[in-house]
Image (cartoon, rainbow, N blue to C red):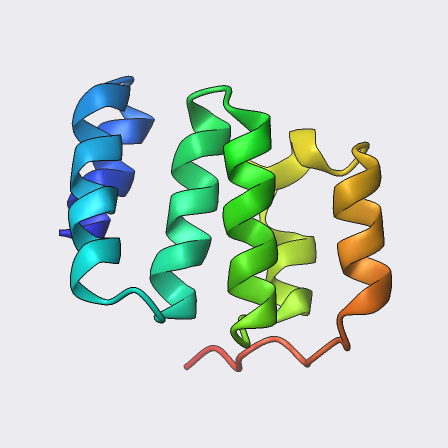
Length: 99
């Protein structure tokens, strides 16, 4: 469901993407990976405030700051003070190793 939401967002089907990510969050409200995907989806839809909110929630729930910093989808958020504060306040974790 989450990957379908991401795909819909990439295809410009924002309403469908938001609906799917909301369903995923309802099923797994404490999953940092789903919170991160929500941030990506909202950012792709141009809702920077919602993207920053979900990004902060994902980081606080344990999502890797290193992965957040290297995600090209979130490039547009890097100039926001909330993003900068989050990067300073949350301890960095090494990115997951690729296999």
